[in-house]
Length: 556
Image 1 (tube, rainbow, N blue to C red):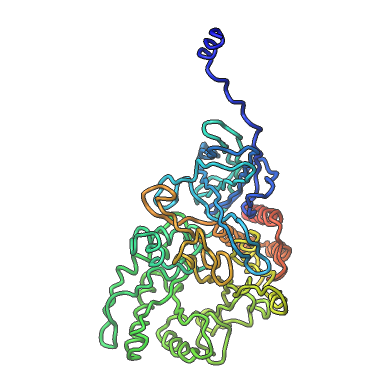
Image 2 (spheres, rainbow, N blue to C red):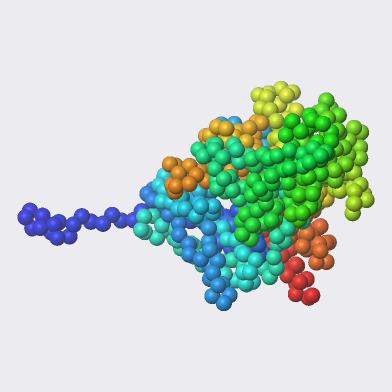
């Protein structure tokens, strides 16, 4: 017995044998990998992007006995000439949905928030890892690479290490290709999404904080979106027929970096800004209104933003408010400001609206050419319409339990949209559909719709999960760091990827490959209700387009 005890003291307890090796696989950025899904079959993170673009994939992990402290690490990719590209890592978090979004959705736990290892706004370490992963649960790691404008074209190599504490569970190769051309920094297709920095900063506990407001706006700009709304503050001062004394300093500090493309280095320039006029001015003397509108036009022209200014007022106007919209539109056009209206052409607005913005289903009923705005300089036939997705993609009310009401909801099936409980292609196909439809831009009403409560526990609006909410509030007490920050979503990435696809389609068309672009778009987006759900065809079509653009540019 003494000998046995002595041996135990000398050798210590036997080391626990490692459990069965976890399953590790790679899936695309188009997939929404739920906790009970199978591990995807890929073994290598294979990415490709133009300069000025981004690409992402997911590494999924599942262990039969669970993982105590899952972590992921990746150094920069090494490329031509010893150059390096950083790899951005996120933990894919989930939200629990009590009800589906219409007949196409599904309740349960869905992936959407992306918790960064380091947030892209304040560059603080966040609590993405380490995290425990229960036995049998699938956990995804989002892997993203963005290529700056001067990144050398060619192949890049790196590695992702998946760890449990200090033990390496898997080493996953990362391969990236940077194509020999750049996406435009002034997008040919403006996309503007509503974002109230008043609501956002208040929900994050720092009402009116300017640095935090810039971080919220940057979350949109990083994904090729132009945020509108923001503080909603008009310039201080007054205008009338005798004197116009508006102070543009606060406005320019807020909006100028978005329109100039300096808010996020290397990002696109903003493509949209709305006139901000108070109710007092709208209700005041016509001469003061005219002077105020003229001041907006003159300021924007002086700053080089003139082609991006619109009067956007009285959203989705009912018949009752059309006379007031017409009055405002007349005043704007008389002052040289273009008018932007979320409606279809109506007799009351004839000759008064420069850009119509109908709901997506309207473009399924009639071609874009029939929805042109009023003729203007350089556009004798009128500008092509923009469009917007809304709750009509899933139905704006709860689905009836049974009967004729439930059957009527079939009209709200099959549409693309931005709900959480829809395939990733439902968001990404919007770019391909826009190319097919011939629309000129996109509007979306909100990115923070449910921030008046806690979207981590209730992200439902207008009977849709995530409708109008594309960001989550990142609070330091929950996610670490010292600054609150906006947490991006999988859907936001998929919207960006669809916009990148659209720019690629346009580049191909301008490089003499319009027939190819049209054929690939038609294969993926046959109509607004008939589009490809499978991720692979999107990735294949994207690569075919990129190769065609590269060949065409090489011949020049």
